[in-house]
Image (cartoon, rainbow, N blue to C red):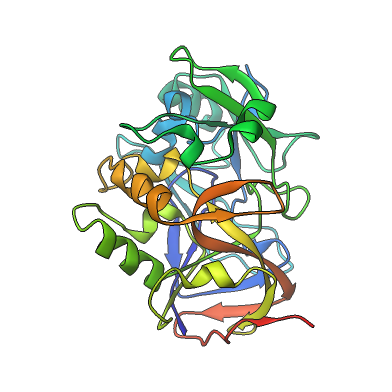
Length: 300
């Protein structure tokens, strides 16, 4: 297997940038999820997993003004707004501009406040029952509120399985294979299974056919010069269905995953609709497009 693309997302839930190489540490790709939008009213980290409030974040894109370097402060981030205008993260008017565009009182922050959480809505999508996405007992157990539609909204700790003080939802590194995307395309040729919908950090090519990542949790491997341990399958949510960039709204991208690849995840409990796999970094290094990925091996 080889690395066919690398992606980082300088601002959580905004579109990110593809890179040819990156230093990778226990905090993920250098600069990944460096910033986030903080919602003043709810006290949560904004996430497009609640589309009614935050789907608009996917109309923004973010990139670093210069390439991040290890052991140095991260460069400023250039944020392109849906209207095509651009501001930098150090612009004194950035919070005002973001608040106006998102129609919420928000702040751009570089560190999550203590106890930070994000929200996730559990909708029924055109006949896709909630319990095909996530365990019903978990949803009810984490319900913080309900949308006007009655859809439950869960609240989770930010970076529950990732590095402390980061803005990841769960884990630090997200890996996806072209084999999984190809299998989904076979199952639903009319849908658009673009890797960008799934926001991976590393896309791998050359794997065996099928949902190969399903067998990797608990195994060790290397990607380029980086050691990883695969932790658990990546749970998919409504965010994958939303319009983003030049990709239209497409509920089939989630419905197909829920129908054909539901995985039990002991770490969080229950059976989930999954595509891809999370990983922890066991040894720092660098990954570049074209690097080899070793076959995962279960630790003794």
